[in-house]
Length: 307
Image (cartoon, rainbow, N blue to C red; front, side):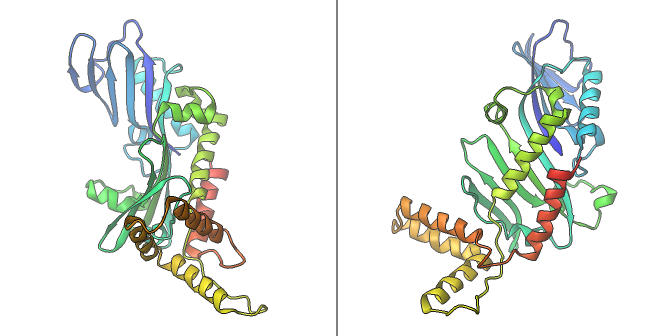
């Protein structure tokens, strides 16, 4: 499931990259950059930086997930082609992603992705269809996103692998984009070879799973407990929650308008969002949406049980 990486390696004696890289450009005596397949490689007095997608480097595309054995194969290929030992290279960015073939268009699942307790939600739509949902904060080391992989490939004029042609394909990714973020998760730097070691690999998959689970999932059917009396206030709460579950964009528009007009304090906004999160976990009030149930099973299989 590991996709994009950024590797940092201190400069080694005798390191010569000019003849090994495509489109190599030398900026000065000690600085230059070029490409090795799908990877960008640059060097300066500090050392070597390698950035890009491991599955795209190994297989020519990153739609098909790269399991632990594939990560090892990609890194070994990279070491052979550069004639460099990467065992001590520091990982300063890593992306853990998985591509899912689903029953319905990806936008139908993405529109059910609600708020995250810590990160801002950014939604990209086209012709009324949700294409991307990104959870991010400018200074955070972490991101989580989901998007329609078929549309992304089409926009780049890239062909989908045969397995995915004609399918409804959703991509989910968790990204740690800063070295300090990985230090925070592992308590230390992690090295390149650790990416294909069991403990590190499965801990990164656990980060992906935790990020997915932290996102509130909407679209639940609100029901009434017919064994208890129905009061006007309870009916009002049920109808309000039903509207939030199925018309979340409209709900957020109203909330955003009140915030913009200064009619909601920061503390009250947090109280509202905390209450929304509580209701989202209240299974006595609403059932899980069938699409989310389907997606949950696929994501759990990949992140918890997969290779």
